[in-house]
Length: 333
Image 1 (cartoon, one colour):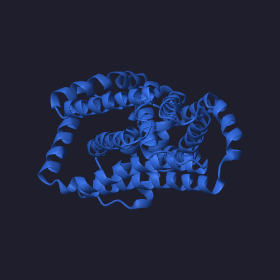
Image 2: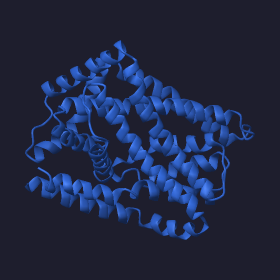
Image 3: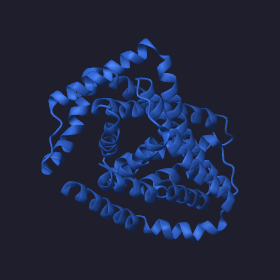
Image 4: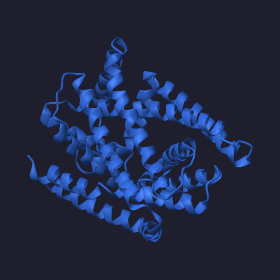
């Protein structure tokens, strides 16, 4: 119970820090919101709700493929709690993995199974990223601004990201390389676990997790139809993310090339990885605005849309997540 109280207190502290870090953006949000169509902005809120619904459907469909039939409503709460943990405890997804493992345990789902489900979520997101990146490049190539230097430079960056993503995905399919990468990434996690007097992720545990992952991969290969449902929901979730940003532009009365919006979002996703300590706050917006301006949009509309999108995407479900997180920590056995 002491650890649970500490984690809940830490969540409150980190939320306060995130608010302080983003205080300037809240001010900017209030200054530009007067120029937005409020009804269209409500559509963005609805899309964010759909984001969590499709995120939940992924886990429900994935687990159903392996004989676990989970009700949607409680799983939805668990997914919101997982996303809350990933936002407030920015550890590259590790916090969410731990939270969801604990929540799914009540359904007699093993830690390995729930962790592998999230590993495949990341993998499917990577594939979706590649598909959408390629689509955005094709949309940009038919643009009338292709002669601009900044346009060509960003296309070169997107091409580099595309090739790098494909190579990374291919390397991670190699078991030896993937296991070494996981071992390297778990070293700081083990350090933190030891500080709290918890069991660290030993070599035997990691090997068991690796066995489960590649066993599942072989299962998917033997029946590729099992892949369709989980991948589709994962892909739709990423599309909803980009659609949310596009709808913000529409709320401002601007209808940019969808490739421009998709490219800015995908680049922002990548550069925000450099700032996991603050959930990408600041870095995400800079990356997005830089691409938007480089692809021909004005700074004013690019900055305003990025701020409005980020405020809604980051903070909309945070109070709900905090409530479910508290329930998970204290109220439920």
